[in-house]
Length: 358
Ligand code: KG4
Ligand code: ZN
Image 1 (cartoon, rainbow, N blue to C red):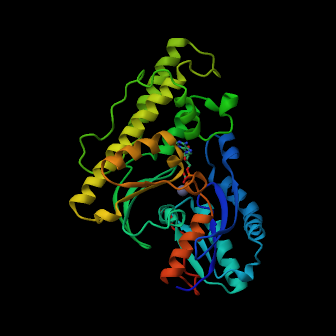
Image 2: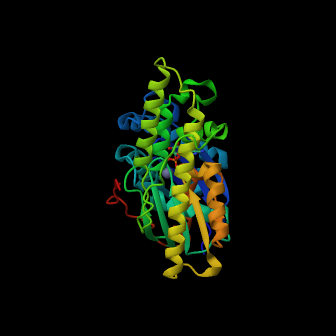
Image 3: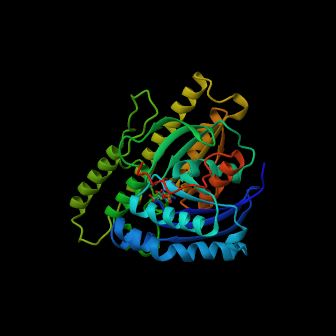
């Protein structure tokens, strides 16, 4: 296939990212600006604020990636940008800037689906992964289990019927006021809960039932366990009669109990998915691979548990390094590369390509 260099732009949520990758899968340059701390101070993402931060940083992030690669934009073969799904205001900044660069420098434009990019990045990191493979995407905005049949063909097996797991981690961490403690002050909700849970003395102090245990599909649910967790928290607070800013004494055990039930749920649904794939013969025995990605995949406890499930069912577990699991520009560039190599979805006329919310 034709060699090339693709520049990718990601602005679907709260990270402004740019990555430059060649058709060999070599990362030539990258830059990432995270809005995490700003949104943490506000207790959540305010879309117009995210938009304005993207607007102010996009040009510099793209230039930084080019500088890191020691390339000028003329040496780029095509520009890829996330067009769906995401926050519309945020998506528009990256999509518009990508199209603007394409027009100015006469480059083709490659529109990218954010979740497909998460799924395909594993193939850049591990060249042995061939289609079809199974993917579990778990992040702050998404939760899905899918068979990746090809570059642009995904078979959805299940998704969350309510919250995403990262969203539940973030809410509980915020409600526990973990960021009031110095050792947690810069961590995301999921990272804070993982750290607290690792220091727990009794992960079984709080009782949770595994969600959807009776449902024979591959869907997920996190809002029920989240509410049970918040209920435990409320009861404990009353028991201790705490001042407003204090953190609950048993918070480490509560975090561990919550992480445990979340992990058991994820493992249970993945096992169901693998059994379904086997029954329908969707993946040949020699290609049985589960890719886990998205911000929540950075959790080592969850990854180790999934590894046990995979080992038992003869699947290979692949987890890209954390910087490729969370939102970044490299995964968008790599998805551009996959499309470039396959000759799919590359546009020289792109005025009519619009962003899409879902
Ligand atoms: O993929 P990502 O950067 O953005 C999207 O949500 O698309 O994921 C961010 C999410 C946050 O909810 C964060 O709390 C969660 O990933 N996260 C984790 C960990 N690190 C980040 N969740 C569990 N354990 C972690 N170690
Ligand atoms: Zn993401």
